[in-house]
Image 1: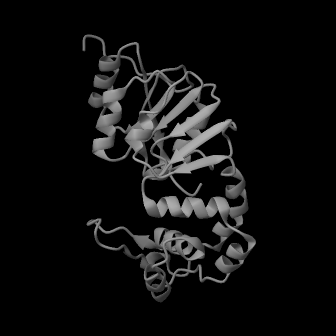
Image 2: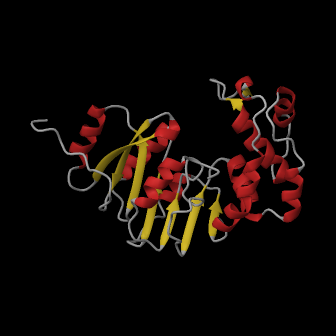
Image 3: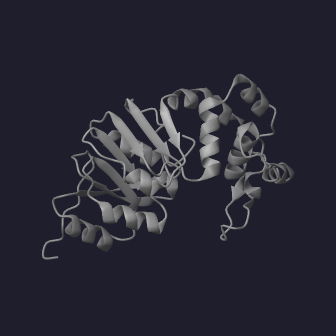
Length: 247
């Protein structure tokens, strides 16, 4: 997967209802479009609000043999001077953007201030990530029938309806989380997931949603053992949390 967390995508795919259509309003946070274990829907919309992420996914979907040849010519081994050169790339689309996006993502350390550029991770010096190119053809096939959009995720959320439409909701921004929770439950089957803060918060969610929504939890080792709080309005394989007696 190019975006999102593989552990979350696996949980979504293995705990999905029957569907003909998938809508992911928050596709730049995590999408199952590239996960091999999912069923192929007749319609699949992945909305990516971040313009850079949208351009990268669009490149993956439509890249050519010439693009692949160009990518093979880049230096994919971690080194300080190569990192600085990649960071200086100003392309907003195409092979150059793809290279910059993944090279900096793999070998950079994100600054605490989001306005500041990432810095080079010296612990990864000498690491090679050229193997990322081998998955490109498979990813292009996976995205062949996917509609990529670059819209307001809450506007996309408002278009979801119908019992055969599966909504995958993985918002990250606090304002998006609040907006999603204010709209739940949806009339369509949905898988809503966010990082859970505490057991008290989880059981408060159970009490608040009652029988309308099934609240579950699972751990994702690939994102620092984060515990994910999951809300669905359909039966799934995850163990549902029950209210605390007397709570």
